Image (cartoon, rainbow, N blue to C red; front, side, top):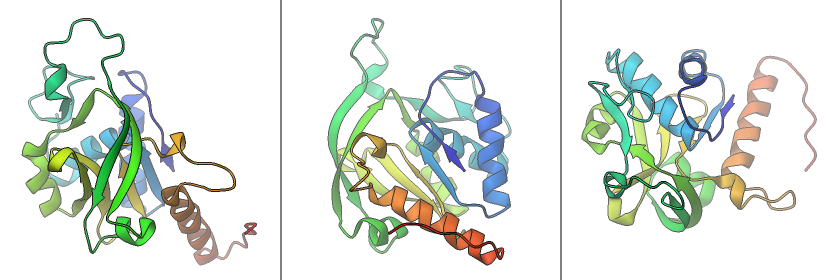
Length: 195
């Protein structure tokens, strides 16, 4: 299952439920930007018991804003061209699944967002097994999560689709497809994937 980029409240509860379903059923899951954010909301609701957890983009009055507006966006009223855009260095922790996938402690990825993980919740999320394994801007911004004890449950705040090419797929996509093939083979389904 993939929850891609997006914005706004339309369909968000369904995406949160989808992320939870993939987590509970141990299905391969990849959350991209908004998908990363909503999977974090889903985990906070399920694993931390924060039933009203949300993104302030969806519910500005949520008592548990696990996803919140970027600090530098708080005084912005004219939204044109104000997102966090462009390429940023992302630093990956070792050991981690993210490091295994990328084979490097530093990657450069592109961004397009206004909301991010509220790191006040990070210790509680990690205590329950949602590990944030990559950061940017000196640790201020979470970039990748991975769920411990799950075959493949990952999210990226960045947009891997911006640099992925058919002849050179972005590593997280290759890892996700491999996890899907492994899952199908585990269920006894034959899958042919061209190399």
